[in-house]
Length: 460
Image 1: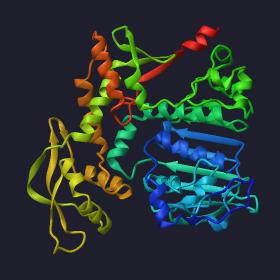
Image 2 (image 1 turned 90 degrees about the vertical axis):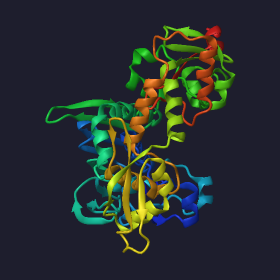
Image 3 (image 1 turned 90 degrees about the horizontal axis):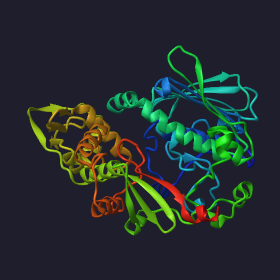
């Protein structure tokens, strides 16, 4: 899994990445939603040389996410470092990045999952006579270690994802079907590119039957993988659109030349160069860049621009409390809060710091953010502390503040059904090049789609 090397190479010991390199290549908390949790686990299985990967979900992943593989498994000497932060067998310092040939290498995924959920790992290395069941605490330390019969490979069981963050957990449960749909899209992408790997995924809701989500046969053909996901009839009629030049093998399989496909990765700079073709159905902007046609959701793109402006510039107003409130912080969390006071203030939280008070009692809450029907409290402070523990000094927002900004951005954005002038359409598209993440609205909807390449159409 995360910390093990592929079976084709000799097993390496799991060791910590050196301190300087950690700051150069690691981000800390990498599990932000259901999709990234599944992505990390699937990548671990592929890195372990698996040819068979089974994913099981209960209640769309709110109750259980389980990923099993037939990879090389984990040697006993590597159990202790398996889920520790920044421990990996794949690199030791920054210079090793030049030779990385795997998905995971930063030693963050399993550690992050331990911090956010209850993690149990069942593994059996090819050199072991019997497998092992390992139970981990939220710090990635082993709390139970018992023999467990299983064939070679590894199973990671993740229960109650995000339950250590009460606010994020409630939001996760409330939006689970949206998160699940996004996760399926990510999983489909890995099913397509993972030639030679059989991937099967099921979901069980309540006590009902298990339903198949995706299933591939382990074919070495990219075309057959696409057929398994989207149906054989539709492949016959669709040429897969990719943003990077495809490999020679892909071109040969589809009878294409690499020059038939877009050669450059699309970047934000392209929006300023787009030519407006017109408005479609009072909801979409049709634009052209060289030979490529795009359709852009006018509401989604304006909503994302307004959302990011609120994220960057809005300072929430705080409401003074009648009396200062104790927070019962740990010593570590208290230090994190004190070191990031300005970020808390921009989120509407204010504190009084009593330097002479005992550690864990130095901080008292004196102001909470308020905004119409939105109320905030200590749980939002805990979430901010958790985020800042991995990214100290980086401006961030609690999930409920982001949700509030998304709601505001939606209300003030141009609506579907609104007729736009060419200048108004050009302004919306230009804004896309001025924001950090123009590709999706705050609720996850794509802001744009590629329609066609006119050169390819003219050749047919």
